[in-house]
Image 1 (cartoon, one colour):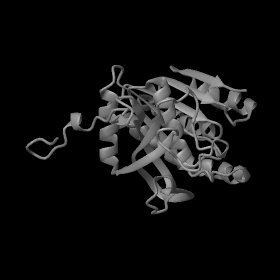
Image 2 (cartoon, rainbow, N blue to C red; image 1 turned 60 degrees about the vertical axis):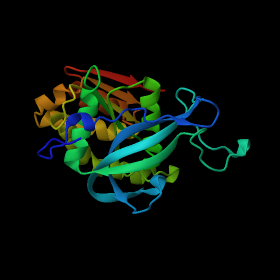
Image 3 (cartoon, rainbow, N blue to C red; image 1 turned 60 degrees about the horizontal axis):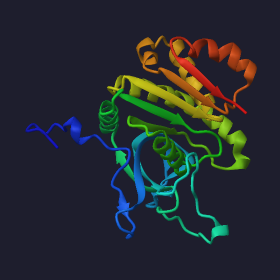
Image 4 (tube, one colour; image 1 turned 180 degrees about the horizontal axis):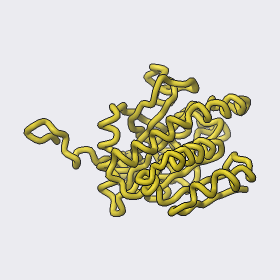
Length: 268
């Protein structure tokens, strides 16, 4: 919806977490839900038309933005990422049975932050979360995991993932270590932007595995730069299976990131 001067109205930007429910022909029982998440990525754009191959494992020339639509099957089990299994004679993705990246939509930066702002503002607590994935993760896998978390949590704010160019291979641990360092300034700038360019009052930060290195390094950079207003919006930080040396974390990171916010660490 636009006003007479062509300005896009905020209510037209609100995108529900669960989009249209599709039917599978068995009465009115829903076949799967569609979950819309937002993404920022500094991966290379492959130019491929297939959604799961759109962004590769190489480094891009800058950060680009958009949204992903992901299916969640009717019989989804909490915490699971249902995938095809040859043991069940499943050789292709089926949205009625699997968590599938269905579609990617691209946005320019201004539109992206307007949409995130509108979605966050439509929730009761005006909140968003940002998820930074770990090592050995493709763009497709990160999108599916972000949507699964959104669905399982019943999150009504703006779900956002930052996808850095992990190689998506077990053998590429060393390459991913180098790349997460390369991506850290981009993550820091993105955190500034989502705090300054949206109306989200509360932003939860979540990282997994090697993604914790990028997130915590970005946060310590913001602390060192004195970005008090930005940091004030980050009310909760959740670090899952952090791939960070414990002594370095306790000495150099924890004292900086715990001020005025709750930090939860899940480690095995």
